[in-house]
Length: 201
Image 1 (cartoon, rainbow, N blue to C red):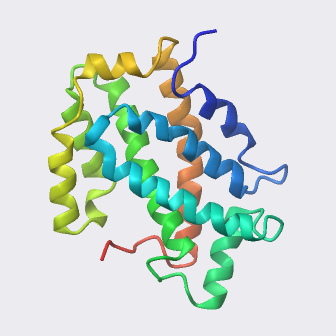
Image 2: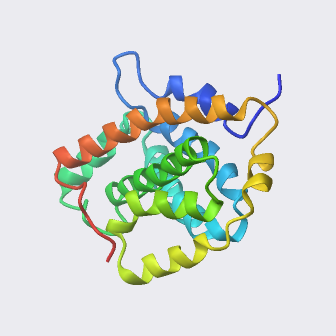
């Protein structure tokens, strides 16, 4: 069977929840990590996103590895920081989960645009996705840098070829439909503890 860059992530998503339906730390981070090769296909245009995503995965993974039993559930990392009064720290795992989720929102929206707007250029696909996800949380410097980076995206046909030879449209649709609810759950949880509306400093 021919694979796309989404194949492994699609295989991993069903394992993100526990039998009780709770979000598991390592499986969630593994799915995010499996999407990093997709970001690579953008080349220099997404260097900033890859660095941000990779850094937040590493931060959350390090916390998990410090106590795999205590941090088995993703939201327990946040709950402990809230109890300790440290979630607003820019280096907190709460902040890391928030920005990781937002970056994944951007990528999901970008993938959705690829399928729903076959006539759009990669710059249009990326810029529109940025506008409805990350832009409102960025200051003007980050926003300007991001907008400039979107102009460096590869040509659409070449990009699609880099994603794989399998049933790419089906894989993108499956990824968007199965991963989006997990991201929405993250937002709902972060909102419940008062940390879903933090802006970049």
